Length: 46
Image (cartoon, rainbow, N blue to C red; front, top):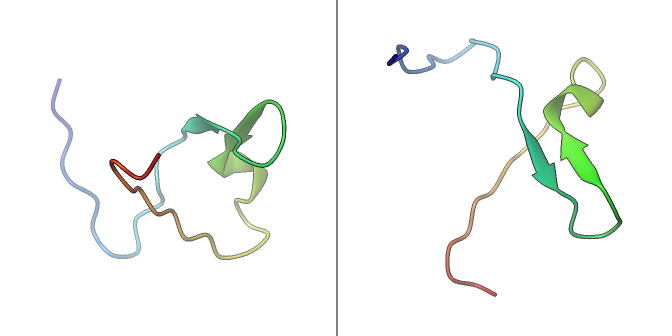
């Protein structure tokens, strides 16, 4: 199923990623409503 792309002002969907500075996962929901979040995805920088 293909969903429509996000538009400015739309809430981001839930996701979790491995934490880079501690054990466990980091979830967008950990920060939702608390502060602004910038997610940067960098390929090939490991």
